[in-house]
Image 1 (tube, rainbow, N blue to C red):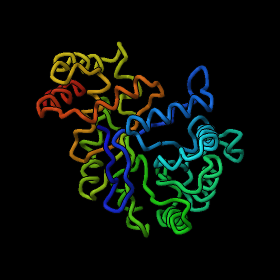
Image 2: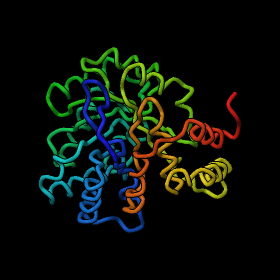
Image 3: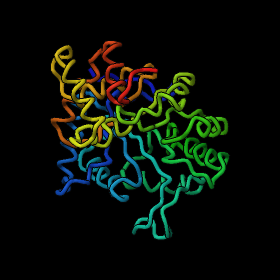
Image 4: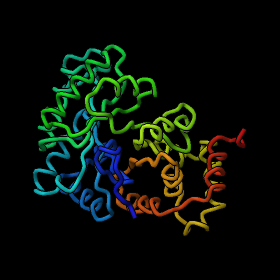
Length: 304
């Protein structure tokens, strides 16, 4: 069962499996507003109560698509926790002043982007706002002042970060009035850096839950030319009989969920059947040696 869990001691509750919207408009045929409403209703039926989006998704178009769904289906928004990210500016009609891709987590920009997100989403607050990427040109105090003001004004309830190193997280966390509730990081059987770079250990130490993006390696897990993916597939084939013969994606998600930091996993699919099968990962209790067998398959080596 996909249960809710608090991101931090004073943070919001989110579902273990999160509906990610990065690919929402990336298909050949863009979904209609009704299609999006059906997807969101399916998520609720499955216990997925958290939506992850970002200002930049769909080249700054996804938030507006979600906003139309919330407008057309009154009461839908109240059933979800909405997490969005901002701070990436790339040349586009939505960012006319950007001459080249860059990061901007200045207070003024965070406030302006959040206010725009609220308008596009047709909502009055975000449950969590994440600074999308570290901005090396902006001081932590400047970023913190923007987050503090947004919380004070009720435009966001909580703040966090995405793709921050442990040092960057600690610095910003020391500047904000209300502690950060999560670090959204790339973590999968094909990207295990958080196991060694201190990110997951920091989350445990701070009693916050990380959020894992690209949990299937951006689809590389199913690439027949990917050697690590082939090893993982063979490993899963040898053990899936122990876990009700679930598919590769489900066991790969269960591997992430089994980590002691208790991550939430952000799905990258908009296919109903894939979403339904992904939910099974929350019920799987991986055996210790099976967890390490998958680690070994992903790394291509035994433990040191």
